[in-house]
Image (cartoon, rainbow, N blue to C red; front, side):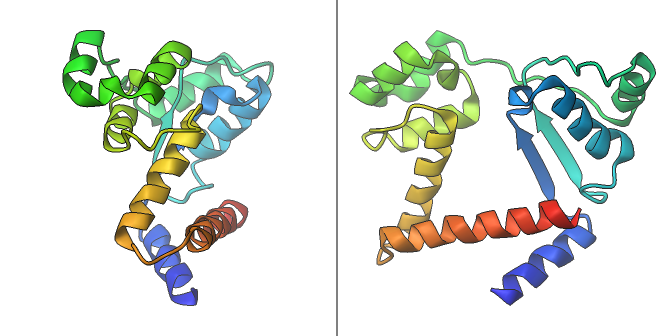
Length: 177
């Protein structure tokens, strides 16, 4: 475990890590601004590693000023992921569309079926989506399946320990700055 921590520390110090921060819009507006300020404007929190901030359009709340937000826009670039249209989605998911869980996702969580990465996960997990209702559920189920495939003799407890260890490493780096 110490070797893993050392390897991750080395990668971060060498600026070889891509941080993907998803769900930014779910934070409170003032919290969004603080995260934005520390990561984009100050740029010290995650060292000089590349940060991809994925989010729906947001407002920053009372702490933001026009000049500060403009400075951040100069330090970053924006891009959007084009939503997958229904025709393309049906062609991509093909046989998986007959899965009842996918029909439930389509009915109750249609936004999960518009993001290419999530569509890939859904297609690969066809038949294993029971209990998946949120993006967090989808990511957890998908990565659990990947760990299980890579380690077929591993049990559920081992998968849980893998996630716990990843959480510890992530928290370590979050607290170390």
